[in-house]
Length: 136
Image (cartoon, rainbow, N blue to C red; front, side, top):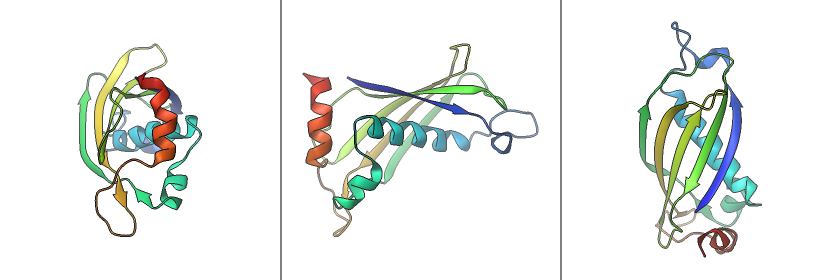
């Protein structure tokens, strides 16, 4: 299993009148976690785009357990429980507050798509090599 963590501080603009993070912002928080997890492997989304692969989201699931508030320091935990073997990659994500209380659980499924043909493709070989070590 591959796992990474990323820290993010809640900005005022991400909260609503109740001083709670607006639910729509969690998709962006999950994206920060995914992007940084790939960066921690030594690649970036930009690198994959240069390799001719784009990654649209096809499913997004969120379960809100507790609210996050303005100025909270969040930890976004991003996990790959399975090594992708086809055109899809499934990220499991959890968001914790600075008291280590679980706030939100999510799952995001993306497809590997050829930027040129817009057809499903497989994970770039460079990413496969980086992730394989975690699934031995």
